[in-house]
Length: 370
Image 1 (cartoon, helix red, strand yellow):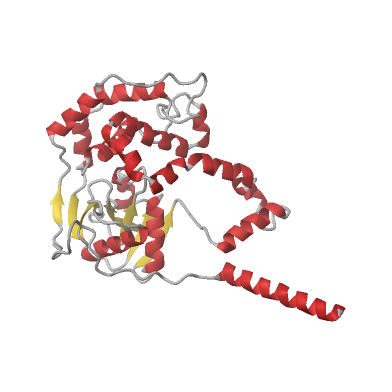
Image 2 (cartoon, one colour):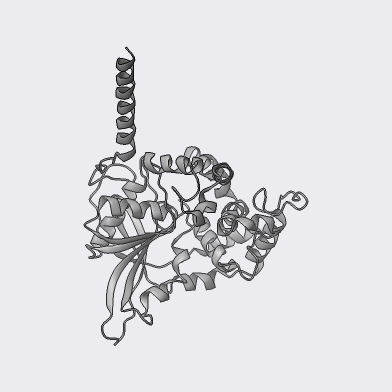
């Protein structure tokens, strides 16, 4: 009887181990997308495949309207003593930034800078897709290879975030024989790209649109780089279209599958160095501390994913609200310790993004409204 019991237990354990292993090693199939959806308003129409030159030129009435809104009395509460950025955007700092935005920031000068590179629009799947193109500057230099590179922004960024790096990518650098022909599109619904009129558009659908964009420009094979949503879209493109993607670089890696999650838990239970290298332990553990931080910093994500129209109504009506919502993320996500600074680091000389560049990005979100 004891032998039979042991055999039954062994069978159950083996069965559980098999199912767990199957779950951990399961690779989902590549999703099938409608090859010709229509995300524009109304019924499908004949697609205009022309690539149209586009220039950023915000109407004077919109610039004046923003100035009027920025000049309205600010209804901002006094921050708690020594709170700094602990509870989000510090209102004293926000007042300073709004004052600078209204009195010193020059949109027309910044607009001229944004038009330094040529911009275009083209219709794909019913949507006008905006993109900026920075051509390789090879000149008479010999032995330099030009390769196409698709740069994809995220939230709360835009194509604006790539301006400072474009000269490094498009101009031959010492010790390198490669330069890039750079395409910077705006994700549908961001910047000057038309938003979807229908439900269901996500990162997979966007990856198909961007593949069609690159092919329309004559690039059957290309490199990818993305951050935030851009990294998720770039990862999807590399997964779904490996025959077109030569290489991919992302600065936000999101892996949420059974295998890595199991290793994460085991690493918390086992001695350091077995699952995660000892020198990397502080990046992953303790789990309680890391998960607490994620919960604290992802409230915006749950709101935007579930009730975007609600928060949108607030942000669409007030440039002050929009600035607070976006600038707080640039502060917190640049360095975790910036929440302890009165200005969140935003006004520090060593902050990696100049205030004018931060306001350029906010203006793109504000001015482009459907």
